[in-house]
Image (cartoon, rainbow, N blue to C red; front, side, top):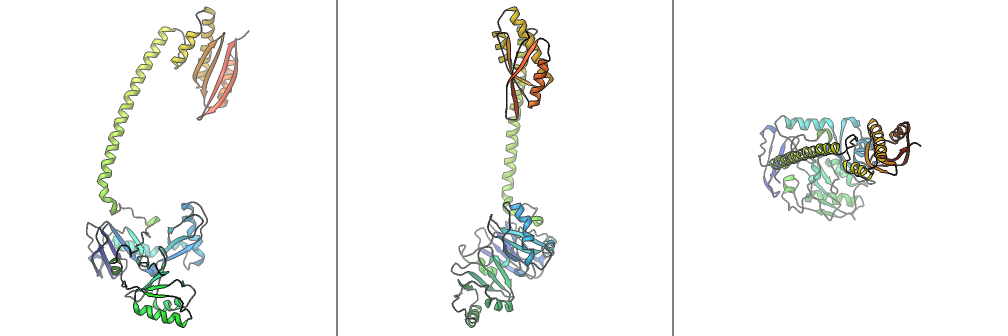
Length: 402
């Protein structure tokens, strides 16, 4: 992926890499409007000066990422000299029950950087602290490089690092903050001076190495891909999240549009088929209703033809039986409609009818039972009830009184 690295402060040093991550061009300008970014670039990465960004590790209570991000400023507040409302926090890494790693930068500084680049129509895809672009040396605890401006970058592990000036660097070597695994310096003279300082401080057991990779980003990017360790993090988080379509996704835009069109056409086709099936089902239901009324005139149609017709046919042909069946069925139909109940099953045997219906709640079942018991000449009882899939079902038994 072609990338364009550029310093966020003047002088604006820039580096262009190709799709193989090889440096193809680099330069420096004093005015940002002189920068020209090729259209082939898929990502513009702003390099934040190390002294502007602080990385901290802290334990943050919580099991959900959203809650941890909200609590992060207050977990770090005690060690900060500025008000948390004036700072921008980015969670670089977090796992439950482990230390969170966060980057801290002034909101005013973030606003200044973004405004500066927006004014010349340059959109930043990512912002990375400069020291997190410093390569890692496997056999040392950290890599140290003195930059051309005499500031010192220190990178410790994948997401930890800091920047300091030369005077503080000597104090840092004499402190207890340095690891004893070993230090790798990109500058030979600095390595020799550090070795002498450590010896004078009684820390000669700390191994000093010289790793000749240069002291500029362009030198680091010229290393083999395996030796580089370019962080994938970004400070453009939260309110600073880029609102534009990332350049790395733009080649997929046409394919995405085509896919959406195809899905729309498929959805339309499925909708038409469903509509046709519903129309056919409606026509069949109308035919069934017409046939039912012709075959069983005077009988209320409950919308369950198979169950209802089976019950009608099994109810016998005797006049008394038929009359009793009709009376009970008409009573059930009226009460069910009044209570918006769905009749699922009707059986008539030995002058008694059992009815299974679905309702919205147990209270409706009680209403149905009371209504049926209130009909003169009918005995009604609730045989069973149960709930399933947000519906309540009840089975009633009805018979003639006396």
